[in-house]
Length: 397
Image (cartoon, rainbow, N blue to C red; front, side):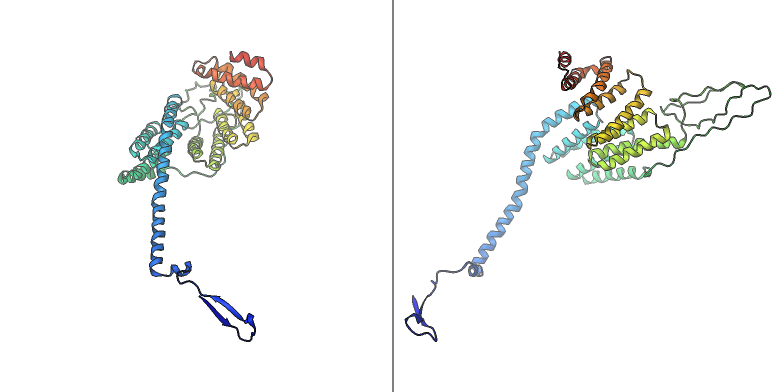
């Protein structure tokens, strides 16, 4: 239908403008949404679609996670069995594999199997470290979380209360050790008239435990004779020095747990404080101080702080060389470990002598011969990178 309309003030043929009336069947989308019937239909469709997405997406994700867990569980079970057989039930790697396997069991809804795994860990820590151990309390927390997810709320609450009591009984940790107690020696007494040499007065050591944990008592000394100086390994420690060593061991245990939580800043702080406590109690040249330095060096190697790690590792090995015999497997392990880190960073010239000394000790020890083929292959790789291919080939034969 066409309508002719004349504009005011315009004359002539062109003054007539044709206008086309819209078809009644054509309706804009904007107006359609405001019609009661159509708006109701659209709202119903949108709500139905949203509900389907909300309910369907989590189920799809859970199904995919369950399939992935089912594929990973057999490999994780084999890795856990191998680690427990070779490294021990409470080794850090065994703990990591066991907790990962418990997590996979929980994804599949196998809370009973996960609880069985962690319950064995709780019993092992209680037997090895006692009912006041922080590792024992940490494992109980994990078991309580599994109980809670499995619908066993009352048992979970009891475990959490027990673990909380253990943590509350732990002594407060100091941010830094106090100044070490310096051992003083009294001056020599005035010699007698006959000019006989009089031994210097030595302070009697405090009653307690020596470093190796055995109770030692001073032997009676005959009158007029000089008491022999006690050996360094049997020298008794004061009560404060024993407290230092106890704090250092607790800090090391906490650092091991923090490492698996990837809280490396806290791990470094714990290792440094433990090192300071040992140096204050035992001196800077003690065997335990050397092992503490190596633990801190491992952290620096894993953080790509290679220069600091190498310096600490070498200082720890130097202490062990002075305190341990040349054929000690502990010393050989430290040398082999440093050689492995140097191999990773490409310093083959520094790694080769360390690995060579360690191999010569391992070949004489019956407990270390099981992995000799792998160790020889690693050492042969270092020789080959140094251009000593003939020696490497001979070592692989």
